[in-house]
Length: 312
Image 1 (cartoon, rainbow, N blue to C red):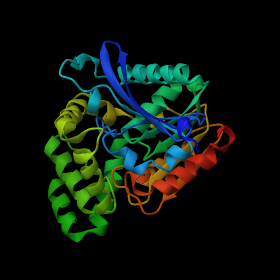
Image 2 (image 1 turned 30 degrees about the vertical axis):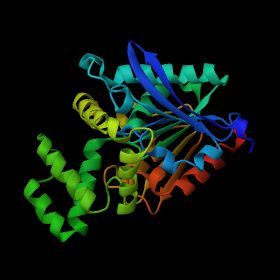
Image 3 (image 1 turned 180 degrees about the horizontal axis):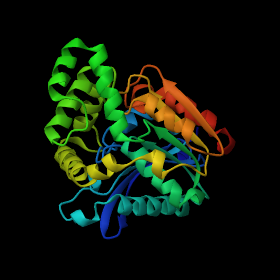
């Protein structure tokens, strides 16, 4: 590949009086665009994701975006009143339209992880014309069902953690401390962010030592995560895809880690069976928990590139 066909840069966009950061990387500028909506709310990934997307960049020009109020897009000046799912949907559409104009494309591929998959479903309802296809990673459908299934799964498979969760009681929970304890139990059961510890250690090292965030921006990342979670978590917990998104007008590909207890794969698969789409596929990643694109990056890149073959 000749050097001048590759692309790698950071771009700050001004959207409704806020500065929002994009990171754009690819081996060949002629490849199709893939816009990645990160999880959370507020779990931006510009600070570590390049370590896991090198193979993906061979097939796509990959666009990572720190959403409003998160990561490098966080500032104290962002009004809390603007931190709504409707505003971030508008932001996503503006980012997509900028990409299409800047790269002279007619459509992009859309990937959404966890919270980003919820956001993606809303965006696809409003502007399906902007996208070739959708990749739902750890697809959020109904957090109440997801928590209930994960609670019973941990209670059945881990005697020690079942004692802790027995004291907590089954969901739903109203107190933040209950959700925190539950999340700790999920991480200890290896069904959380990653199944294997080495991946989370790599993420942490990249956040601290990488060029994108590094020490100077790590506290900005933490503050943005807290700010986003505080203002958007209610939208996450109210969401029910079975009631609000019964159809998607573009081809859909759902990917879940078999060990995921944050968004159990079986709930996502129920939605895959339920939703109406012109084309849909389901994929289990057997060695992953909540982040299959991080835990099995080669398989992830291969899966997406095979599906996007008509545009590559």
